[in-house]
Image (cartoon, rainbow, N blue to C red):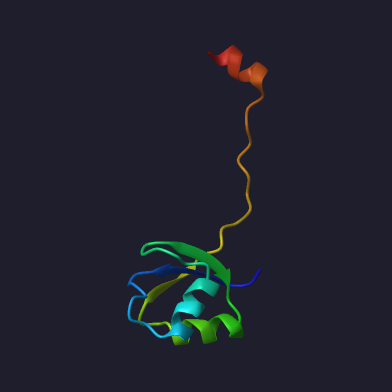
Length: 80
């Protein structure tokens, strides 16, 4: 699976250039504090570079897809 990035808007776009406002909108961010998770690719890196002063970027750690086993209802009722 590709590396994922969590992008959070930390500053207002008031006073920013039209290009920067459009980039923030294209990233799916609207209000300060809003976050989106995107797959990392060269296009996304270019968008991040344009608005790096308005956002924070975190790398998301991939979790293993180990599912927890659930007890059947009959066993759960018997234990209660």
